[in-house]
Amino acid sequence: MTKYILHGGQAGRQSPDNKKFFLEMVNGLSDKINVLVVLFARGKELWNEKFEEDKRNFSSASSQKVFSFEMATDKTSAFIEQIKQADVIYLKGGNTHWLQDHLAEVPNLKKLLSGKVVGGSSAGALVLSKYYYENDDDTYNKGLGILPIKTFCHYTEEKSDKLAKLKEFGENIETIYTIPEEKFFIIEH
Image 1 (cartoon, rainbow, N blue to C red):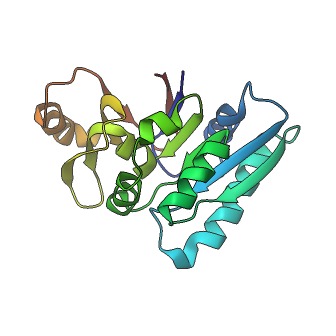
Image 2: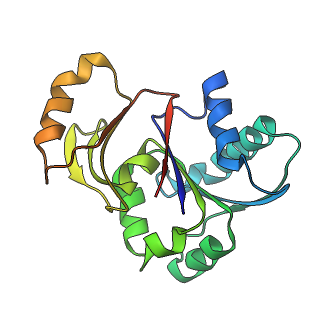
């Protein structure tokens, strides 16, 4: 069973809900946890800064755990090995299309993620879905289909017209996750 934690976005903000998100990714795991931080949705010039931010977010959410952090490499074969060694894979948000393009290069990604904890914030949640709405470019897209759902991150009631269009987009899928910023859902699949 794989535990997916889909976050609505803005996970870097300091808030009680975001602290719960980072805590949920390590909840129930041993005291020594291997965390793989995937930053493919960001420009490489930001990777080190965002990696340090995420390390602080995990560590402050659960100070009693011992973490081993690794930044994902964009070399596919090495990235596959990193996934195999990780207990937690965190897909940080940013440009959804960049993230999806990188992850699409990984053969059998769903199988590689099996039995892991996979946290995805914004773009990270969207790419795991079968279909999603992308706020940045106001488009409806087909994701990697790892989860048989439709997802709408950064959701607010003012965007209900976009939600109606997402319901009609692609195959008829009943389960649609509307996730406001700083909120999250847990799916065990």
